[in-house]
Image 1: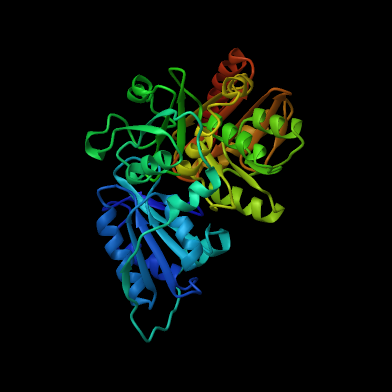
Image 2: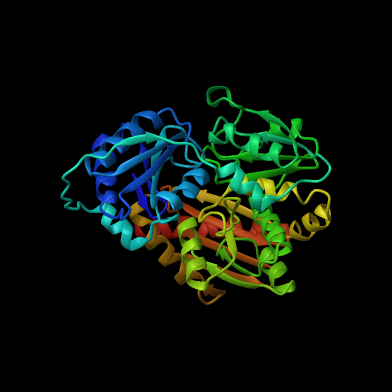
Length: 428
């Protein structure tokens, strides 16, 4: 089981069971000031049974439950602003056998202090039992107000991967003026896995005309297909930033592993950039602290526009990007794609992660300028960097590298992997 500000995640029936669901939900209820909580689930097979446990725990604690059914994560976030709190039954991009809970307070994800409360049993005195209501969201109409209309009736193909985008992405894109074709509508017959950032997306490439979008199971991530090629997830964030700057936004927060090309573009166009630790909740926290206009995570293809939602919003982002197709889309792509990214992960026993990274830093501190905001980030030169950090959602160590020189990426990756293995052998 993984417990972090990104939520509680595990394999249901293995390391995540009914008692865990009831305990975490009950503890979370102690943070709900409004007495109301909106809930929703992605399409994972275990979602329905977990939703029943979540509903029962909330009602037992006197909370009024507003059930959206199967909906994308951004929809629950949007509604949580209205009701005061929310729970999403999802483990986002993790494999299908995983599931979990993502907690929302006042429209944002939880922070470290709130996670501590959720993780430890809380006493709650309740005199009444809450009720459950089934509700619908006005997410699509609210999103179209921000996106506006698309020119030229572009032909858009969406790959929902059997996820919760199924009943939302097509409607949203059609409403703003796109001609939409949907593939992989059903989970059990989908030709790809739950995380579009790591899939080849061959079917989407084959079926795309003007542009294609692939969503993860809960629709906070989105990856672009254009001109017969899958684009890196950093391109999603890049294009979201371009569009938001066109709308007049100037202040941005980027996770520490997001492309340097995005930061350079923002600064070149008169904007300001702050960096945060990796993780949606960390980006949001820094956005709130700096009063920033927008931001996101390149590694997850996640663009965040706080005016609309305090979360990565793949649905809104695809709509915003679709409005740019009649502009200098290729020119922007060429600028951002001069920076290449490599993202690898290596499995080591979780108990050794901190010591491995500490040992690695001792081997590299004389050679590179090191930043330790999140793991260790090595500044190689003006156009190259490498980040080594433990994952918040999986039992792995992640290696992210960016450079405008692909041979440099390969050499760095091989060297870092060798040093990580060497460090592990020295401490185990």
